[in-house]
Amino acid sequence: MTTTASQEAFLQAFHAERPAVTAEAFGRGRAPDGRSSYELLCERVAGRQRVLDLGCGDGLLLEFLAQGNERQLAGVDLSPQSLALARRRPALSGARLEEGRAQALPFADDSFDACVSHMALMLMGEIEQVAAEVARVLSPGGVLACVLGGGAVGGEAYDRFLGLLRGTIEEVPASQRIPALGDRRTRSRNGLDEVLAPAGFAAVDWRTVPIDLSGPVEQVWAAVSSLYDLGRLDGAAVEHLRDAFFAGVRDMTTAEGTVPCAFKVHIATAQLHY
Ligand SMILES: C[S@@+](CC[C@H](N)C(=O)[O-])C[C@H]1O[C@@H](n2cnc3c(N)ncnc32)[C@H](O)[C@@H]1O
Image (cartoon, rainbow, N blue to C red):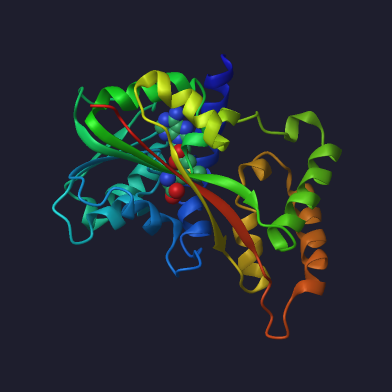
C-alpha cells in the first residue's frame, strides 16, 4: 500500500466509527466575533454560486452555505458514513454529494466558482495533485478558501492536552500510533503558496484566528479527544490520558466549572488566475 493509500485507509476507518466527529467537536467553537470557523469560511466565498466542499464530512459547512442562497452545492469525501449523514440534511437535498478523493475529483472542468475546505486540506497526501484537481474544476478567477488547524493557543487546556498526548504516544507500542497525515506545507502560508502557485493560484491570503472551546471539563475532553491521534490507542491508554487530563486542568478550572480551551485556525484564501 502506498503512503497516501494507508493514510486514506486510516481516515476512512476512523470516520466509519466517528462520521460527524469534527462538526460535533468544533461546530460550537467560537471566534472572537462570536462566529464559528465554519461561518468564517462561508464569508470567504460570499457571492460565489457554484461551490464545492473538499472533505465535506457530514455536511455542516455545506448547510451553512445553503442558508438563504440559491447556490449549486457539491461535496466530496472519502467517508461513505459521513456522506450518509450529509445526505440526511434537508438543506442539502439538491446538493451533489460524492464519495471520492480530492486527488481525483469526480467533477468536470470549470464546474465551480469556489472550493471550500474545513479542517481537511492539511490531511491530504499527494497535495500537488489536489491543487491541480481544484484548479481544474474551478473556473478562471475561482477561489479556494480553507480552514486549517493551527495548534494550541497556549496556556489553556488544549495546550495541556497536547503535552499529555505526546507523552502517551511515546509510551504506547508502534501499533497504537497513527500514520503521519497530510503534507506539512499546508500548515504555513509559504508552504501553501509553494503548493498552490504551480497549479495557477495567486498568493495566499492568510489569517490566524483563535477559536474558543471553553466549557465544562467533560465537553472540553470530548472536543480534544476527538483528534485522530487517539484513533488507534487502546481503551487503557485513552482512560489513562483522560484521567491525566481531568487532573491536569483542575488548577485552571474556574469557580463556575469552566475549563479554558482554545485552538488556532488559519483561514487561507487563494484565487485562481484568469
Ligand atoms: C477533520 S474531517 C473534517 C470534516 C468537515 N470538513 C468538517 O470540518 O466538519 C476531514 C475530512 O476530510 C476527508 N478527507 C481527508 N482526505 C481526503 C481526500 N483525500 N479526499 C476526500 N476527502 C478527504 C475525511 O474523510 C474527513 O471527512
